[in-house]
Amino acid sequence: MIIEEFETTCEDGIKLKGTLLIPKNPKALIQFNSGTATKKEFYLSFLTYLTEHDYLCCLWNYRGCEQNDNLKNSDFTFSDYGTKDMPAIKTYLSNRFSNLPFLFIGHSAGGQQIGFINNFDNIKGNINIGVSTGYYPNMPFGYRMKAYFFFYLFSPVSVFINKYVKAKPYGLMENLPKRVVFEWRDWLEKENYFFDDKFYGKTVPTGHFKNFKFPIHVYYSTDDPVSNAKNSSTFWSHVKSEKGICFTELSPQKFGLKSIGHFGYFRKSMKDKFWEDIVTRLDKFIAT
Image (tube, rainbow, N blue to C red; front, side):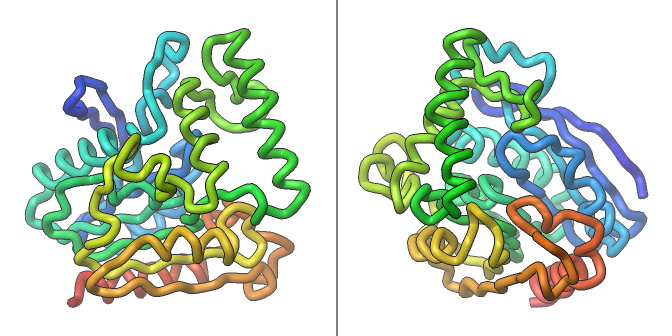
């Protein structure tokens, strides 16, 4: 396996950085889109496993996630991730590895926003892990209180003091531009997320959510406080694919774990069953 760093530029001039994990004989290419404000290295073990099964994997950061980004003066929005960043990575990868079948894997926001991409040439399939709305009333009470604290108390105070959401020193997540957090908060207030009439086709484009042409598989865990059964069902009720959308419900007990939550999908303890199942599905995608 070769590990290679790369940089590419979005249409608006913003530079994005990422890492390529390249096997000796790649059979397909995976663009992995991470969750919001999650350090990309968190996913490295998972993508290394996929690379060991001959998938060329791309791991990258959204705008505003690099240490040298000037978050105080940033006007980045949450929807920039899907309308500007994901398409830039897709274009870079498609141009460089045009001979390989293309696959998407998304975690959380990384799966929510791929419908904003315009170029879906050569896509063989899409895996989504913990991808749903994040409607507060459908969260467990304790987690809901944490979400309210972050979005309605911590973030406004942090923006007032720092001009951005300085979350990293407190172990909450990576630091974020203020408009990213506030747009995210607005979507979470609505049961249908950005599909709500207040946003869809107005502040965000309609995209391709209603006319995907590749198979989609969605995984969620029974104990995921965000992407639980209710929020998952709501999000995917707004999405259509001519090749179908399938679901797998996971449970911690199946893996001998106390919890999976929203991030446990990528623990090494999930390798023998969950990660193995993903490879099986990816193999089926590229075989059709």
